[in-house]
Image (cartoon, rainbow, N blue to C red; front, top):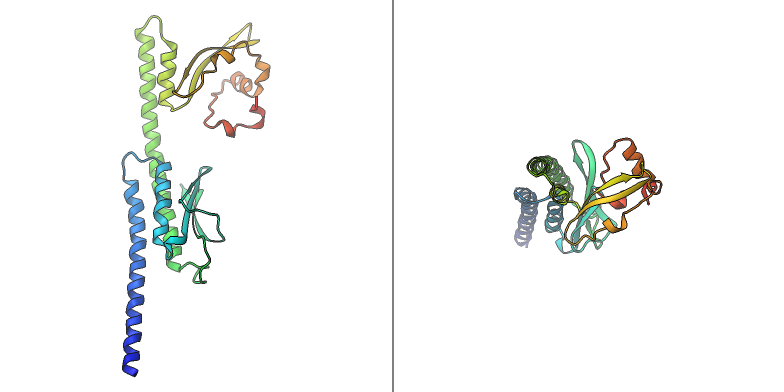
Length: 253
């Protein structure tokens, strides 16, 4: 009887060791998977974040009830089954030591209390390692993308400059197309002041495919209607609007 009990205990220990080993393998595969995704030469950061949240759940104890989310730069990237649950752990994403986002992993159902709520201490180590890896990748990708964007923009300026140098009657709309496509914007246009700055007129416009032209609606405008815009023009500032929804209240018009 004692011998059988001893064999049973040993078997249970072996099973536990094997289980723990499988869990560690899953964790390593997770980190390797993130690094592998980051190595794709053309992958953009938004695509990378989505791939990461898709990878993470399979590396936790209960993948069938695990969800993940990355929140960064006012954007959210969720795994398919994501819900905002009470059973979750999170880790900061930092770029150049400043917090820029959060990585979250949660269970959508309750589980037994372990080291950190229903999570193992190894899962805390994993989410911290994953967040640190995402942070490092973000730094490198942002640097690479800035260089690429700068080269594209410089090339577009060179193309536009050649038009002015080589053509007597320059197609301004073509110039706007070159610059607009280089900056990945929906619209590029030129306004001209008339009547000693008492009127503004949209003289040239280029629109990306699928973007509705507005040139006919932007004629004989009163500058007083757009004080936020005019203040920047008078101060010789560039007007850059990457996100219309983020404009301040004084720019409502």
